[in-house]
Length: 102
Image (cartoon, rainbow, N blue to C red):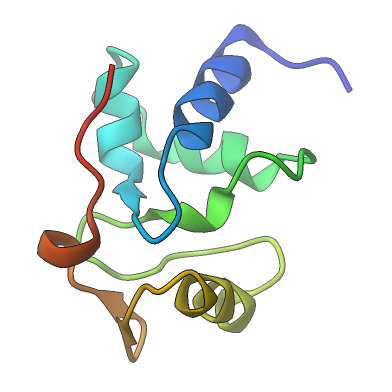
């Protein structure tokens, strides 16, 4: 699979999200200098084939867990296994949001 530069950048950022923390699609887009590219971040993550890119740690700005290639239930299960408390389909971003990194 040939990756675009954008996909490589997204995956690099997502790899830095610590276990038990999440970031939003908007935070990733903003970190890449493309604040309007939230959907593009989601599309890049949906195409991810690398096990070392923890796509499950990226959620919507509302705290909703959002989509996942293997389904929402699987995403929630993996997040819970990492210690993230999920209430329904929502995460408290104040508790589990990763600090922005550079």
